[in-house]
Image 1 (tube, one colour):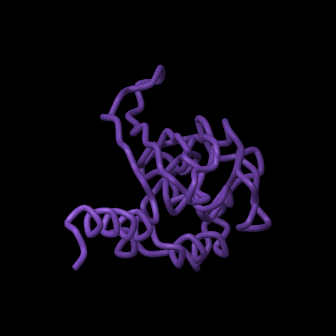
Image 2 (cartoon, one colour):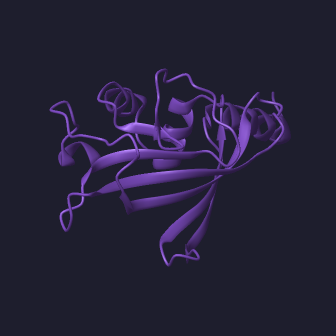
Image 3 (cartoon, one colour):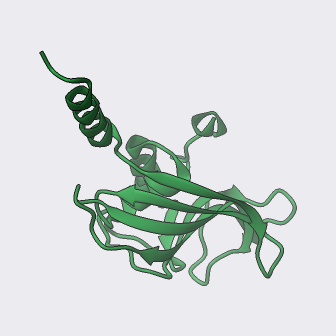
Length: 158
């Protein structure tokens, strides 16, 4: 018969294996521009762009892929050619939601700024500290973004 301690240890190990992402959240804070953001730390399996967007914005890999192929993801204001692009500290990742309703020269984006990347954990994951802005209004890029018909609908985000 197994002891209670052995059962608890095996449960804890299984629980850790099932947890794909460890996460911590800090409350919403205004930055120097007055925009509100979440400072989060997530554990991701790799530093690929698609993994960071999935973890930072809490969306599925399928939605990330759909947005990537619709050219709605930019890193440091540049179009991304591969969703497996490696992300580094201080990279700004934008998921473009569309034009601002107030002014079509501006865009609405969800932005992730990678603040730091920790050492690989025993499970092979990277702890990544991110600053996440939801519905941020920015000027269009130097290489302007234009709306395409393959955009995910607002219902996809709910």
